[in-house]
Length: 315
Length: 164
Image 1 (cartoon, one colour):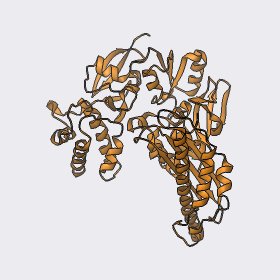
Image 2: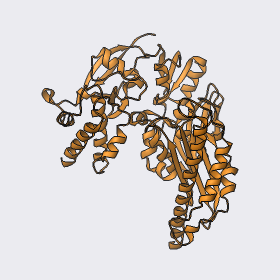
Image 3: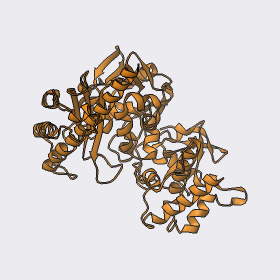
Image 4: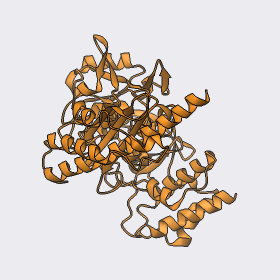
């Protein structure tokens, strides 16, 4: 199909885009990478009068300062995969984005556009939740920070005000003794996830016990969802990672505790049936993938702790 | 909406065209400039038949507006032809291996795999493995070949390119 006619204006800055948006109201849409919006226009699921193209507004690359990885809203998916700063400071995201779309979608798609689109099966949405990210939004009243946990409000709906635009995503950099993992189930590579799980696990100073575990799930609700940290955390807290002391490969990883945490997390979910999968299947997937993700994140955290310990001893 | 006049640089040549702001790059290349090697497939960015290179990167022609291509280099498969319309070595590999049957997906396959091989070379990596080629082509659908011959052709070209 062909989109209904609309007008187009290129915004040279975020401030200009905010002004244009304010003066055109409900009839305008922001165009970032266009890999979700343009299909909606081609399918006539959306009928804006005006597209405000923010691609000329921002050319900043990812940067790191003060323990925060700053990803400008127009950071393309390909950059998330390939950029050294992203790979070093948020390997979870760099890995997960490999599952998004295809080469062409990743060349154009942006992190800000993806988050603003708020697809409930979004891999990127899951990652920013697990990573405890914040989103900077600019509107007529200035700039504000929105915790990722408060950003998603329902199917393709965010907490952004009508006149607001995402300009940056701020992610706390990966810490020593932290491990990550991303798993998803799809019918075909590049499809929207049926269920996706992103997990971050952190170990204590001794590198033997889990102090924090954050698990985010996509495809199990009307929005990407952060599991109650207590469900993941309490079950794992104090967990002994037996393989670590002997320098082993964590074969003795905490299977029972991980399984229990995954079961608790999945048990709380209330996914719905749709054409892709039944609610029961989604819940089952959530449990299996959460267990896999926690297990792998624990193993990686233990490896990171050993490396940090060795570096400390050498220093 | 009012049409506007824009300048598009396609396969190294400048074209002045009148476009509606809502016209996609695919529509303008195919309908206005007569480039039949850029094709409408799904309109959602899933199938790859409208693939063009924008400043060297594969993008969806159906999800890019023509006005967004102003000041950029647009390359379609036709732009790969040598003097006297000689085929690009990758196209030769497609022919030799029987990787093109009805031909509808071929331009997208060729442009996407060319980008893959070029990237590997520029980044000093080994030529892409069969698995890496498969991954790069998940968004390019072929309903004829069953893909095996396409992978064969791209592997042959990757070996050729690595030997140069």
